[in-house]
Structure formats: structure tokens, C-alpha cells
Length: 275
Image 1 (cartoon, rainbow, N blue to C red):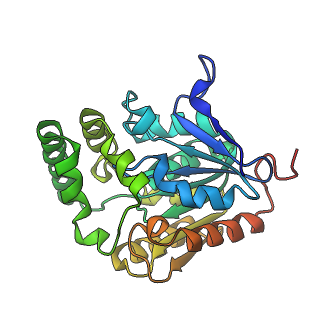
Image 2: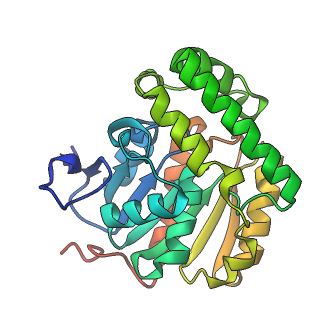
Image 3: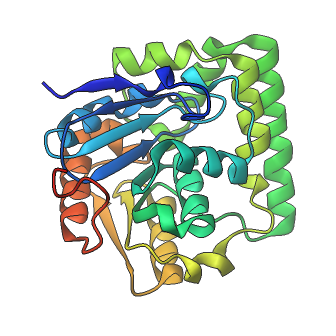
């Protein structure tokens, strides 16, 4: 069985985000979840990768064991880097925004980058402002109604069609603090990427894999645009039969593609030699 060590028990001055570490040897990989999720959402992928990687699964700001931390994307990326150190970062949706920001701000910490269901922002200023207003309205609903009714509506979106969260994933989501989730929406939603980051993508120096579920046409198009913007160091791939949350719908396939990507890296994360 892989080693599982809570990082939240580090002394003061240690990791700013709650995290767990699984695996004893191999390249370092950090997994970052999406909005309303927690590190439990990555559990099947983490368990698979931990056979030959050291896997750190984090709770993002405003979620799970990191619910007390209120942070925008830049501050969240700083906290993420301080928690994960130099590693291959794998981020889904909101987690992809955090990992991408880290790759832009602290390239020394990102040995490789995997973005799943991610974007570099909304181009049109009016659409960006509308998204911020919509997210603020959702945040107010969260604060007034609590997590359970909000989550039921969130998962009923067409974006998540066909998704059936595991019992552990759903229980962890329901345990989230509504005020903390509301802060995440207001501080780290897509509309807060103002200006959007498309013009910055050429500065990403880490080898990058941009993933999307094959049944998610919007984010497949965004994945292609991200890979093109990053340049020769990036490539795009699809997860067959999966929608937006491909890591939940087919964790085996996602673990396979992440493992293959990490194996191709010439600049391996610390621990790649088992030391």
C-alpha cells in the first residue's frame, strides 16, 4: 500500500495548504482539484500514480482542509507552490488556473504542467464582467442556502452530464464550508482573470500537456488554443468517452496519460531517481 502522510501536521511555517502525500519513490506530482471538490476527488488517480510517483494531493484555498485560506489566483498559486515544491503540477478546471498561474509566476517550481478542462480566461470584457456578476450571485446563493442545494444544482449543469461522483468525493464536497466556497468563487473564478492570460502563455517554460474530455467540445477547443499559445513545449490530448471532469469519469485513463507524460520529461521532478 502507498504511504499516506498528512502534510497539514507540519510545524508552523510549513505547507500553507492542507495536503496528503502518497507514494515513496519516483517523480513528484501535485494534483489540484476544481471548484466544490477537495483532494478526495483525485483519490483514484492519486492511488494509481502513487505506485511509482510521490503524489501530493492538495485542498485548494476555500476548500476542504484549506477552507480558512481566502486567496485569489495569484495568492493561491503562491500557496500551491509553497506546498508542492518543485514537481509536475496537474490541475483540473480551477486547479488548472492555479497550476497555470504557478507556471507563469514560479517556473522554477514547475517541472511539468498538465492542464485538464482549463482556460486562460474570457476574452471579451463584457462577458468577463458578466461572469463575475454571475459568480457573485452564485456565491450569495451558497451563503444563503448552504452547500447541499447549491451542489445539487452545480452538478446538474450540462457540463457535468454523465458524471456520477463517488461516495467519498460527494461526502467531501458536502463537508465544504459555504462561506469558504463563496470566497473561492469571488476571488478565483474565471471572470477574475482580468486581463485574461492568453498573451502570457508563451512565457510558460515547463513541458505541458493540455487535456480535455473528448465529449467536452468547449474545453477541447480551449485545450487546442492553450497548447498553441504555449508553443512547441505543449501538446494537446483528449480523454475518450469523458466529459469535462474526465479525472472523475475515467480516472484510470487520466492516470495512464499523466504517467506517460511524466515519463517523457527530461527534467524530472525531485525524487525521480528514488532518492
